Image (cartoon, rainbow, N blue to C red; front, side, top):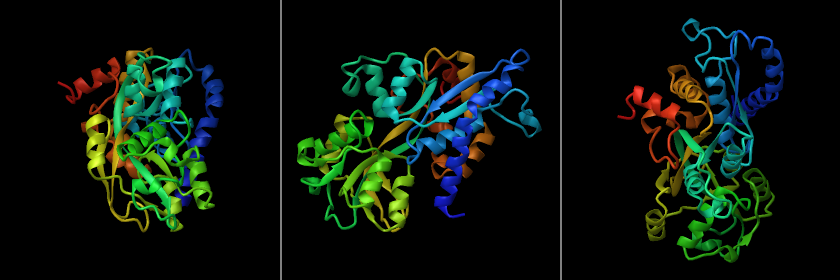
Length: 344
């Protein structure tokens, strides 16, 4: 199946799952006496990114509604009585705020945003620390993409001066990262013609030549970039050199990354930086619930779903689950990792 049609089909399935949650609530209510039901939301991101499809796979894997066939009989291997759903959101910052406000039980976040939120820095300096955040797992690296039109004449970060560039929406984690990168290369927000757009809108604007490029933080391959590359409309600009060495020293949540050739059609190996994609949860979620969710996340059946369901799935490994966390582990997750001897 062509990748674009596969992705559309996958998104359709996840959206249907989201729409069925109210129906699940009504249908399962009658059986609640026999088995307790727990509804669990996972805040993801836009449908053009990686959070949304990966979140849909994980939500399906960790769910085990009342009446499901047992795991050892070929049924669900999720958390008993759990109905999880991936919810499209505006991304990391929105997810953190919704967890804080009780609108979400959990959500995905970049490691930098998680760190800033927990410590009340950068984007969260005025509103204060979100000390109720806890972590379930570090999932995979998120790549900083600097995507430009093939005819833009932009070959380096310095070439962005005076160009029409989307740094992402105001208040987004990607925007803060983009500004840190610009600063490392001696540029500021006023040195570009800023067009603040979400990734999907930015991709559309670039396609129509309304902007010259955009920053985008996402796991690879990201649908928004994939489609543009398939149309031979874009190049990826490397983020490399001495400025990056200084950036990594000043901002330890960044990591050096080499994006392999062929990650996107027609685009060669590209040096860039990345941050970790992490699954956060509210401290108030019961320990046993998070324990069962973490156990389901690392069940062999989930591994199969992740590897088959999304190219990023193969990079979600239990060996890296506790690396580079921006917030403390939830006690339920910590209990599982100690049992699995991931933590000593």
